[in-house]
Image (cartoon, rainbow, N blue to C red; front, side, top):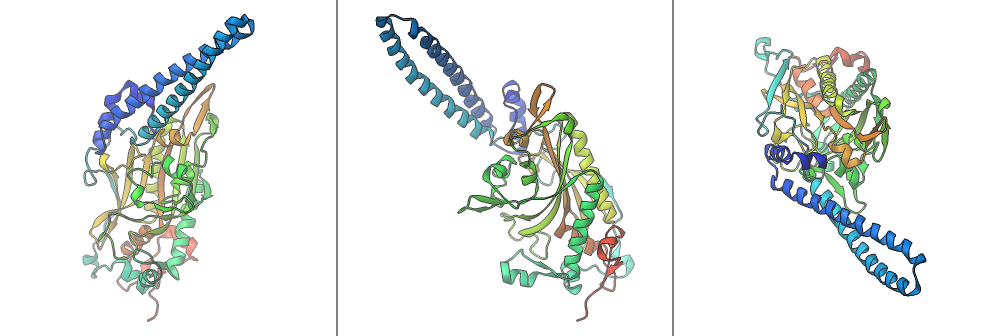
Amino acid sequence: MIDLRLLREDPDRVRASQRARGEDVALVDSVLSADERRRSSGLRFDELRSEQKSLGKLIPRASPQERQELLKKTGELSAAVKAAEAEQREAEEETHRLAMRLGNIVHPDVPQGGEEDFVVLETHGTIRDFGAEGFDPKDHLELGEALGAIDVERGAKVSGSRFYYLTGVGALLELALVNAAIAQATEAGFTPMLTPALVRPRAMEGTGFLGQAAENVYHLEKDDYYLVGTSEVPLAAYHMDEIVDADRLPLRYAGFSPCFRREAGTYGKDTRGIFRVHQFDKVEMFSYVDPADAENEHKRLLEWEKQWLTGLELPFQVIDVATGDLGASASRKFDCEAWIPTQGKYRELTSASNCDGFQARRLSVRMRDGKKVKALATLNGTLCAVPRTIVAILENHQQADGSVRVPEVLRPYLGGRESLEPTAK
């Protein structure tokens, strides 16, 4: 949720942010109107309550005749106080409901536009010329099946489309990736976390996933639980309703969890293989910081992601995501996209988002700096989304004989294997 004081002081900035996101600009005025009712009804309640208390003090000293008159006025005031309190509560709820629909304020440096209007900031690594090497690259599914690593047919038989099994070296490769990612994050000062995959509505709403992203969320209606699409959700809610002393910041967590996404609206996209699936595992970095350090922490998260992809020896580019593709919580987002040879383009592997105080206000996570208590800032960054990383590794490190070279950073976690070999037919 954005700062209501900022909304009152600079509504044009909020309108411009909504417009850049392609969201409802009129919502800004609706929130302002509701907030004005909230404040005026609050003043009315305070005035009536104060008058009620003053009358209450006069009653013991009044004469019998005066007491009757005061009691009558007290009764009338009591009814007025209850009505004012109800009006105040209704105005507060309406303000909160409307304010929760506003997206975060877009950072001024974010490029304007939709999904395709991103700006490339950096390019790393060298794209292989398979033609010069004398063979045509196979896609990750063909490679994975030959390695005995991926089984989508039985995944579909058991669970439907966009499900899969990782088998043999595929399962070992996932475990190697997860352990290597956790090792890097731990070395960088993150506390490893295994997080819940089911959360209550407030955790999901507080992180901003029940607005525009709600169509991709799995909801268990009978129990009113949500399946998380990322460990960002339980990590953001970990300190919900808490006040953190400033000298404890930054707090950094690396969460490993299963992730569940409906992938609504992607019919016909990435239907082959395991690039876009309903269930996958992921290692996610999450930071709680002083708002003054949020932009620097955003850059640090990006550097850790670049370190990870460089260690995997993958060619990739870094993009500054455009306003219309940010998601409700992020004020700015950097994606790292790895080159996928058989698609002939870069595809997203990691994201790093600066959410400023947006999630913290919604989840009531605050920091105490001296006598001052204020919202802190939260940031998140994908370190390893396993299936997509496996896709990139298999395709970029494949050899002419069908084997796949193992990046050196993963070898200690794969028993020293230097390559993954096709299984015997």
